Image (tube, rainbow, N blue to C red; front, side):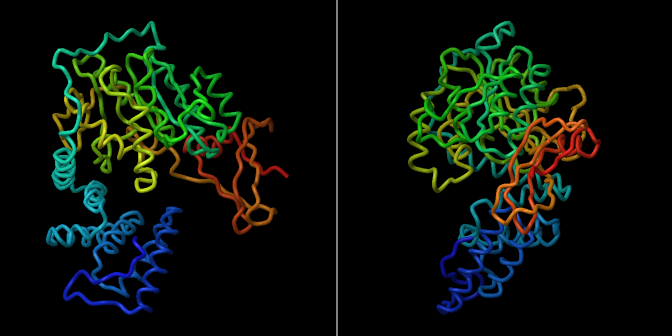
Length: 429
């Protein structure tokens, strides 16, 4: 939510007093702080406060609708989103830039399948019209290289990993282990730095991953989310897959990749959830080397120009603007929701091993957290030991104490192991 003094967007425009503008700015700051911690209940309260100051403000309304959706107030959220949908184009432009994508996701959550498909297809088609004309033209004679499973170093699944959060580190380790079974003929490569705990470095290496140290060798200007895209420039790689560290590989995805390998298309993309309305999802695409221009320089330039404004979406914004116009010319897309760009349904596959109702291709594996009491002062780092039933330490992480408690995001499979007694977590003294 922007902090600038607002003008009401419905009815007659009116100015606001300095006192009202200050109250609005405070509500906006509190809203932004709440959303930075994914506290959508608090975000909704601050949006309501802002709307009492300036009723009908389109930006606030769209932000409020998002919070209502995230807190399960779907009917109230839908009412706001549909009112924005009925507004004039000029009024819609005053709403959040992602309001329409929010409506698409909400339609999926509410089981409104026809609206989901119609609105999602519209969002993708409009984005395609905006961005499709700037890519290099692919020679129609260009064919994908034959896939050689006996040379796994030529076929790479690339991840970025930074920070010491088990939300990302533990699924990354699990993905390398799972890939050995599901992705025969592929090598996992992790671009990472020293912020990742050394036990994660060790476990990734022991599982068979290639590790690329980005502390000294990587271009400083490239955002860490984009490190994985450097695989595109590697002359030793023939095929590459780009994946998110916190999304688990699965049988459904493996079947789709095999279908791509057997196809005449140079690139591959998947959509498997209501929010998958970006042209390229940064962790759900792949391709063949030798088609795209140098990614390193393009990423360096883009990061310098757009990293601040794009924030945590810089990787997807880069792909939308710089990569989509090219790959759309030879793309196999698996997508049963929107039917965009000649999409095909996912191929038949073995049962997915991840038994959670929240799972889909590209889903966040860490939608839960664990916590406990701490005797340490607020702001102190609390070291947490993850142990086997005999008390042997398997690995450790650190959480910051807030209100005499610690809290740590954890992937569901670790939480399942804790609940089953296969591991336990204790605070180090």
